[in-house]
Length: 299
Image (cartoon, rainbow, N blue to C red; front, side, top):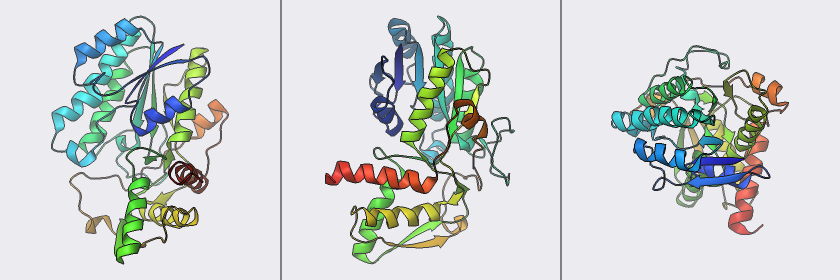
């Protein structure tokens, strides 16, 4: 089996490469090799390589910048996704499109089901939803929505918070983190495992559903996550001392783009289908920090 992974140098792409299935040939393409803004080149590359699957781990993910760069955001997150789905389906290949909790507006009080109505409240979420809808027109497309993605490599909240904790403790500064945006973290190690399991199932023609959800288990705020990152980073010797974290309202932390107040994903169907249990977010965080410590400190 031959699988093309876009965004191979991103945090999920890198983890997908590390955890790939036996007997699978990975074609990992960076942005310069597979620019989603160049639809003709993407189409030509797919038809030349003829992968069995594309895992689209690339996207325009700068949520605030998306409010200003609307066309670019939709070109990458929607128009290009349709090109991937249309092209690979033309010869029987399949697309696994990574999507987001931001397709929901956050007004619900219980975890979102894959069948719940989508109503994005920012440009990024709207572009990802359009990418879902356009790609689902073609056979073989699967959508995997996730939330609060982080891992032991790449650009993410966890690694940024490590630096903030380290600097805050040394400089006696306070880290301000919102307490009223509620969700569930997802680590790339677990998400990549779900990607590979879905591909195994679909390759055996065992999938009827086309939209799946996955995150770690637990409902927390960004504040909760930030405090725990400092606590366990200190425990594993990544920082000398955790910084002081202050809980604030999102009204006190202005951003260009609106964020959903509640974006927890219901993953029950995915758990049952793949016979895999969600890992508690604390255990996932501790595991990822241990791996990061091993890589950085040689522990």
